[in-house]
Amino acid sequence: MSEQFDPLAAALFSEVFMADQLARNVVSRVLPKGMELSHFSVLNHLAYLAEERTPAQLAATFHVTRGAMTNTLSKLVWAGHVHIRPDWDDARRKFVSISPAGKSARDAAFAALMPVITDIVRDIGPEKIRQALPVMRELRAKLEAVGQSGR
Image (tube, rainbow, N blue to C red; front, top):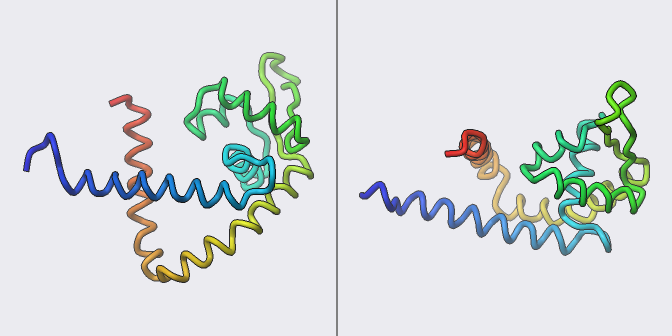
């Protein structure tokens, strides 16, 4: 087997890419009108953390440019889903927090999404999902390390 083409690696990444595309499609279809996947992702992250983050921290978390995160945040501000305030100690920085309306929008999106995800987990089987999660987490960690090292 050549190092140039590993059929196992190709099959793994083919499945990962296709699962990602299909998951994004399913999630996008059940999100409330006007909410994009990127909006839901940021709201979900802020709700989970329950603390402020800078736009730069959010961009790093989601592996997007600061410009892309600024665009997403401006749409969330316009919708009333996040608050952005200046850093009182460093005027160059800002802090982002989820608003009560943002928490409600995230909860509504989650409520619409959970029946779909729950059905998928039930159909596949909770035990198979439990077995797959450590592998998926390790794969994510390896990809993150490669992304950070630039190789």
